[in-house]
Image 1: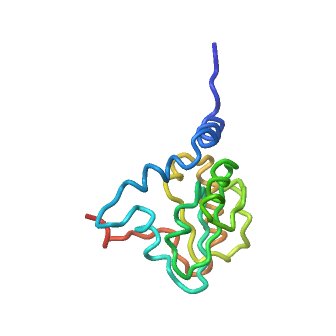
Image 2: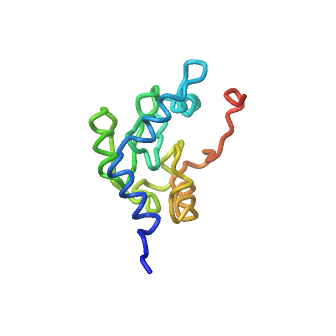
Image 3: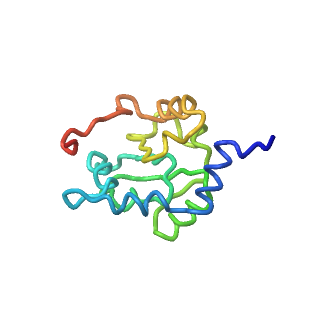
Length: 147
């Protein structure tokens, strides 16, 4: 019996070969003149707010933020390479199950189109809770964009 790659091996190979694929697809999903990255950025503006972008891919959220500080984390060197070419930064190659962020340092943690492929999810969510500042909300619903 032939055994294929593990899920994490598949995801790593996919994003290594097709860096930026998620941004390329979602950047074309425009409603009311706004992309999904614009929708995500709307509540994240704030002077000094540290936004940790988990599995940031090619860093499309960075260009949408105003006044907030941003750091992009991803396991894929290819995705981070494309993010760097796009001018996003700072960037950190990291396993999102072990976030290299001080406890309580983040005003917001975002993850665009990656939670469904990250393993182990419970470890990532525990890390998200750890790095969020006291009183920061990890889940928000944006009814102004829900139609």
